Each structure stands twice: as structure tokens, then as C-alpha cells.
Length: 366
Image 1 (cartoon, rainbow, N blue to C red):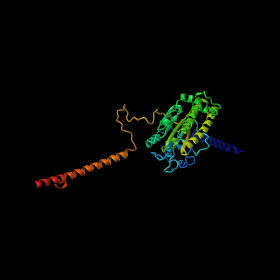
Image 2: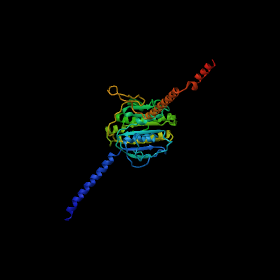
Image 3: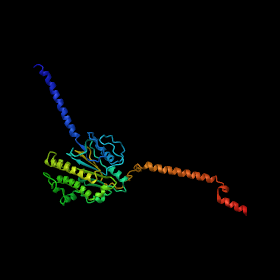
Image 4: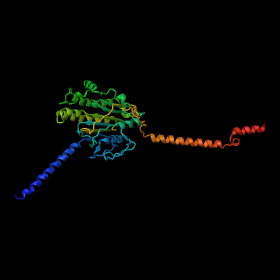
């Protein structure tokens, strides 16, 4: 009995340390719950299964590498291996879902934890597609229904011109024939509530994109790669409105998981099993994303008229090639002028010029 007072404090401290450690593990799992899921990918785009985290700011580089483009900095991430040199996917579809850290997507290629979930865009990848395949007019579609933001480029201007973008357009689309309201199990969702309507509108946009692609199947048969970037924030609004433990949020999460699974399968099949479909689920971004409403084809302002400085042009990666062509062409022309001038200066008209030679003979005959 005399030994118990000495052993009891040690047990209390051990239990306290164990409780703190378990709390830290649970907290860590909640913080790092965001994920990147590869829904579909062709065999020549090799994603390795594992728990290798990827930073949010590296997502555009990962998308560029899957499409066969080069990036400025090497992506030191073991989840993506180098694929075949002469084969690239015909399309890349990236769906960003805000307001949830993970979705039940059992039929996937691989899934990776997402760290440092900072806002990102695929503008750099879109500009690369536009610059390399400008004559082939590839499809570039960037859409965020919650912000009524739509960027279209190439053939997307003709194919997706009727795609509903504003909430008013989507409201009218939901009341038309072929609406998703007739096929979705709404359960606790209310089609008249603002937050519910935003979520249903995003589901409707996914359905309309696949319907338009099925109507224009020739888009998937050309040689130019297509790029789709979709941002969905309906779940985030439902979480703010009803709470993440509400039946509305749970029903919407289940609906979106099924819709995204079918959306990935449809797009993958339309492009002949040659498309990469990624889903990024993020609870909340660490910093707000501020973007200007502009089109990718919009001309960029080179200098600031209100600035007292005379700013130079933005650097172009073709500058070195053009500079070398102009430099060596000028050197060759300068050397040619020097050689020709030297020969003309040291020329003997009586022997080197046929004009003076014939004139000299005529004078001698006279």
C-alpha cells in the first residue's frame, strides 16, 4: 500500500501525455484533410499510389505535366512519373470543390493529401494551350458558377455559348426539360432556398457540359488538347447556411460524390479514354482569391499610363530565339557588305570588268 502514492502520479502524467498526443493526432488529421483525387487517367499518364502530399500552388504544374507541357521549375513530387514522350491526353478536367475536405469517390486512380491549400488558377496552362495550338482552336473552359465567372477560348465560344452562367439563367434552366431536379434525390434539399439553389445549379452545369460534349463529339477527335477548370462552392454555402452536421449538407455531399463520379466517367469515355480528371476537395483556402473578370483573349496592358516609369515589355520565352536570329543575320549581312566593298575597291577595271575591257578594245581598234 505504501508504494501506490509513488506510482499514482506517474500514471496521471502518462494519461495526460497520452490524451494530449491523441488530441494532436486528431487535430492534425482534421487540418490536413484536404485531398487531390485522380478520378480518371489513361495508362500512359502514370500516377503512383501513396500518401505523398502535394502543395496547392503546385497543382497547375502537375496539370501542365500531365498534358505534356514543360514547367519552369521541376516538380519534385513522386506521385506523378514521367510518361510516354509521344503520347499526351486529349483533355484535362480539374474540378475544385470548396467546403469539404474529402468525398466518397471509391472508383479512382489515386488520392493524395493536399497541403498548403492556397488559391490557384490554371491561367498559365490555358495560355500555354492557346499559344501552342492557336491554329487548332482548342477548347479552354474555366467556370465558377457561384461567382458567375466564365472564361472561354477557341471552340468553346461556339460550343458552350448557351451554357447557363448567371444564377438567373440557371434558375430558368432548372425549370426546363432535362433538368437534374427530375433525376436527383433531393431529400432534405429545398429547390426554393438560395443556398440549395446554388448547389443544384452547379450540378446542373456539370450535367450540361457532358450533354454539350456528347452533342459535339468532334471536339474530342482533334489533335489539340482541351482544358476544363471548374470551381464549385455550393457545399461551402450549404455548410455556412445549415451547418456541416445538417441533413442538407450530408445529402448534398452524397449527391455531389455520385455526380462527380459519373461526370468523370462520361468525360473519360467521350475523349476515348484519353483524358485526365482530377478533383480537389478543400475545406477552405488559406487566403482569399481575388481575380479580375477578364478573358484570356483580352489584350494585356503592357505599361501603366499612370506610372512615371517607362516599363518594358513582359519577358517572352521566344525572346532568345528571335534575338539570335536577328543578331546572326545582321552579322552575316555586315560581313557580306564588307567583303563586297573590299573587292570593289581593289578591282582592276581593265581586267576584272567586262565593260571596261570591251571599251578598251574598241578604243585600240579605232
